[in-house]
Length: 296
Image 1 (cartoon, rainbow, N blue to C red):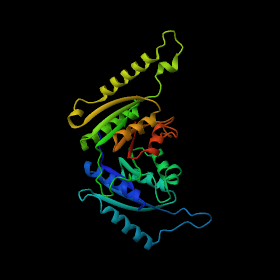
Image 2 (cartoon, helix red, strand yellow):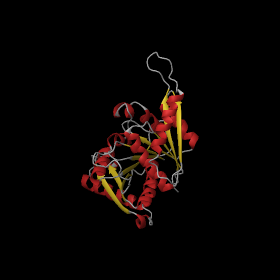
Image 3 (cartoon, one colour):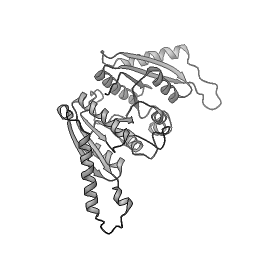
């Protein structure tokens, strides 16, 4: 059973962190979870300067700013605000995950330093590599979405490759679809049927038959994953396509105007769970809607 009781949302007072907070607050409201807002003051100096110190007047300003952000949270959500100081922001966020016992982390995909520095080389990338709980990565707000539009997950796309992590992701997708009364699409991407990799020169080789059989088997497995009761609270669709996995996920997301993509993540070792070059990484970089990453 999916339970979300504590949500952690790091903020840096940028517009994108406000956007992330709106999503964190909505989920906390749906699940009656406690929401922790965290701001980390960086003490690491630049060049040869001495370490930075959080002065009393700066802490007062940060406390005031983070409480002002918290005003947007629904009144029935219990909110905890924290201002911490640390040399490395990502280490503090990971430490706060453990300290709060959060079972969901919500992050924006860039901060005041800009998308490339924030995501590719800095905080978000480092955190999502090592966070052990599900992580909702929220991109910049689409230009055609009003700033005060409520957070809705009316169309959810769940990428399923039948791995343990993608099955865990499916459990979250089904649960969120129930909360939101959503349209849920289960998508499987066939990059290459196994038969084409193993023995493409066999005498009875029939590429059309192999593709058709692979698609039929994928459809069967997807349908078997849908609980009988799921169709009573959500519209559930299955889709099987061929091609590059991350491109097909992004394409389907755009076609359906998805409000949320849900994906499992797995890598070459338990330590490096988010492998650079993986489908998950590319989807996170290019998605125009939030992406929920779930580990097995």
